[in-house]
View (tube, helix red, strand yellow):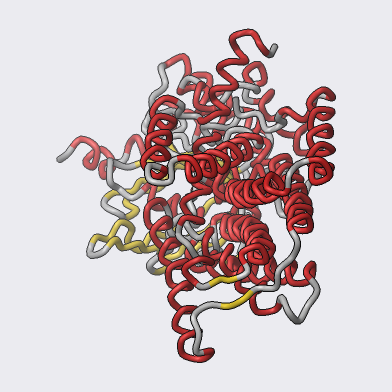
Length: 239
Length: 311
């Protein structure tokens, strides 16, 4: 079953076409990677899905319902959560309050404060941040800030999770830990759509990969197909 | 620290608070009338600053529209004071400001930073000039007389408004609504992506804060006996709460209260004792505070507390 579909998704910034007639779909339970050189339009696509930016043309549907034109908070409540390329935490709030806010406001149905507190605590446990729950978010090292962003996204109880480079800026050990975390998340049944530059990671985690270049989709397939694709190699290495 | 569950948790502080309120409530029985009048003025500043902090504290949107909401309260009092009982007039003053803030909020809260500050300032000036024009054109006079209320009544009404405003501010800080406000202040875009309807949350807080400003204006007008747009919408009512809150520090609830109380008292002393140098002295003190106490009096108290006084 398709959880997310995009049809001729287009985004223009002035005269520049950041995305041009991009069609894509993501099935429930899948892990899909989104790759492409810098400026290919990857983050722009995420911004359109999550409602940060209005689409110029085309339509995005979540579970068959059109979500283009909706506000970010509405899209979040429908079950789509995201993280940001550079962690956008509530720096002056504690780690716990970061997760608590998402748990309180992120769902369609309202939740009682004690339930939200319990849930926030469980999620911090899940990402292994409970020992630092009373620290201010801004005092966390980068790797833990990324984990907190993941916990905060999870606290909205999403069915579809958009990860924008969760591994950027991490060392190899930390990358391995995040990959473990991603596997754990996928095992809970959440569909994942992720932008990533760490090739080793993306090749081993993803069921399917979409390649963007200059705002257009140039290739799509299993990691093996992508690795063997002449087009992709050209885009990355030049002709 | 970011903890909101401030100082009132401990029974000692609760007892202190209770004692202070009893003291304030019995004040008019044993002090000179002058002190009662002075305290009413201090309450006015405390209420405006506290209500300013309800919205601008957590969201970090610096509003300069306080004079608009205060002035609207003043004008409601001047226009309805003869026809309706005092408490009804005060309630209407607050309500009109509340509704005005909802409208202004929906218009301006998509602006951020400097744009928001300038726009809110512009709005209060616009309202002032509009009323000036209206009065000159349709009523033929610029000023209005206000029904006089005795000093003790003004004092008690101020005290009650202060207590209600304090309680409201405290409950908001502790509620999920308060957490939403702080999330918006920390990172608005991220807040909308975890399901917070930023427009609704911000506008509601803005309107609640305006309500108390309007209420304070409505009762304060009765003390002035004569008002005109220059008095009611004096831009000082927009700047003072910001300065007082910075002076006190917005990290804790008692910050703006302390800041406003000390500031208002200082103003009174300086005006009476050094009428010519008052603004100069005032400015100097303010600059010193901002330079050396970036977190206001609250910061000073907390630093002091870490030295061994508390904990």
